[in-house]
Image 1: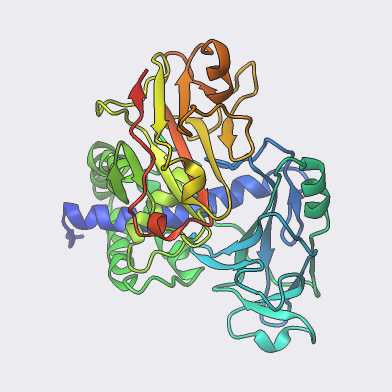
Image 2: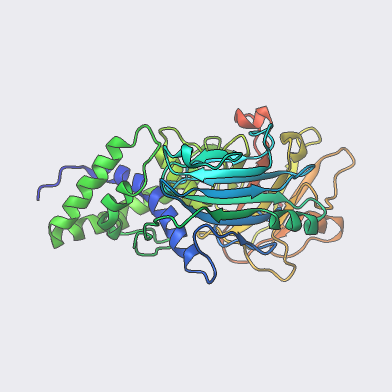
Length: 416
């Protein structure tokens, strides 16, 4: 079979399809856990979340939702006041469908919501607010802010309920091969290209062309062992290195060594940014809820090294609290898997409620190093993995207008 696409088009096809593969990978991993099933809430223990770049400032609950045309799923949300919460729903490509909270549903911030298949709003029971999904499956990720009373947050999270009104027809998960974030999917990704595309509609307005390319690559890969080997070599030698570099430096606004994900959660035509977000922090929320800054390089332009000591200096009028109407947090994770790093102190993040030490002028310094600093600076410290690379993720929940406009960034991560 003659090849009908060039190297740039191969990158496009791979980069587009990867977003879907990353969601399916997470679906397969989630459902492999004991006790996890569709339409069943899983409550994560505080300080734990089995996905990349978790948020340690909230009580997490999550679920895979499955519906069909006749079978809705009912979600009950308790009344929550005085603390941040949201029930986020994402589709099978990683696009945010909706956030249920008092900001988006001021007349119905709690109570009963009916999750329904596309075009099946009539199946919602009386009194339930219908939420139309993009396909027959969705991911729910709900968060209740801990503040300084985590037991109360956990109690509220336990009051969320989810139940199916009947027995929906549920398509099995697509049997893609597992892969990790350093060694991304190989040519086998295209073995499932048609299935990945056909099983879940994509709201991306520019999807037609990358879908056509993905199908063309899939047909070429299937045409002969030589074609398959050719594409596999290209993926390993060119496509994966290109995408990994794109994901951490070019998939958003890059400033001060931070990648600002100003376009996140809902991506419009930017399907490559969607794939990058699914890789670096799957289940990214919409920008009105949270804007994420991912730091992988110091002020000298070099990758962050766990053997070195770093400082972030926030001026007195530029501290994190000035960037949010909700709360802020910073977490330190390993590379390339973006997972939390075990340490003897169980120190993984700092946030609005941490007992931080501020300067006399109101400034704030945060520290990252393999050894704890002396004196009051320890309160502002995150331990790094000695001898290994790491990344910082800075979250701004309910970001202010200057953050959403890309005018506010965390300071450069300077060697201390």
